[in-house]
Image 1 (cartoon, rainbow, N blue to C red):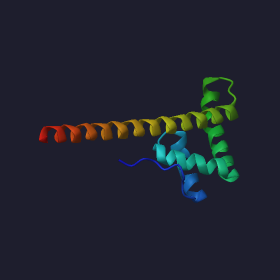
Image 2 (image 1 turned 180 degrees about the vertical axis):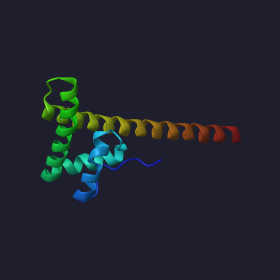
Image 3 (image 1 turned 90 degrees about the horizontal axis):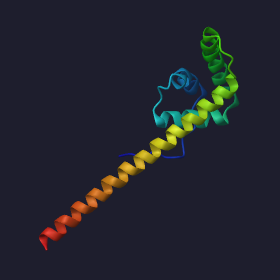
Length: 116
């Protein structure tokens, strides 16, 4: 089982721009989302592109629903929610890894006691 590394590689803006719609549609894996968000946080050009595309996407939806909506606040909330999803994924991976190791430990102990 692979645990996500917190340190991510530098990634090209063109790759990020291609992933914007996937991000908006909640189609990125936790690892892809982490790389995407880390890049957007550090790159003003990609953040601007994400903001524009989010505002167009959500603005059209909200206009159809006839709702008032703070689009910039909505994007910030989406990003916060994404970070929570990543954190929850990391916690889940840790807990599953811990349980597997604990189970293996008990199996090894049972084998040792059975031999003795």
